[in-house]
Image (cartoon, rainbow, N blue to C red; front, side, top):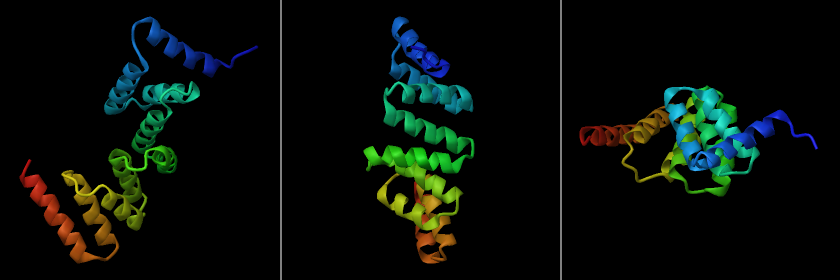
Amino acid sequence: MLLNRRRLTSAFIFFLAAYTGGSAADEFDQAEEYLRQGNLNKANWIYFSSLNNNVRVDEARLGLAKSMMQARKYDAALQYVNAYLEANTNSDEALKLRSQIFVLTGQWANAVADIKRTMPTDDADMYMLLNVAYQKLDQPELAGQAKDEFERLQAGR
């Protein structure tokens, strides 16, 4: 039976991690570091390997959503974050990520809905996104409230 090259390579990553005393968790930590460095190809390789091997699939989907967003592939990012949210419906991290994607794609009402699901939060950036979305929805009073909360949280940092 022939294995395709991609599946064989994916299996090798996890074998190597196990053999060297590493783990899938270590691989995911490395993928997060690659994302911070902007090395999307290496991060994606780890995430896709995980998906191919059915190892920590949900986390791989969230990682791919982050990576696709950084690459400005918003449709793909939205698909991965939605798949993650199917299994993790109340994940603040995923809801915040999806709200950012909605803002970047001009889906203001969807952004507001996701941001509200994460409330209350001490994440000032969410209030700034909420401010922008309310402005775009022509709701200046709510935009002002979000801006005030953003400034309050910024002053407390």
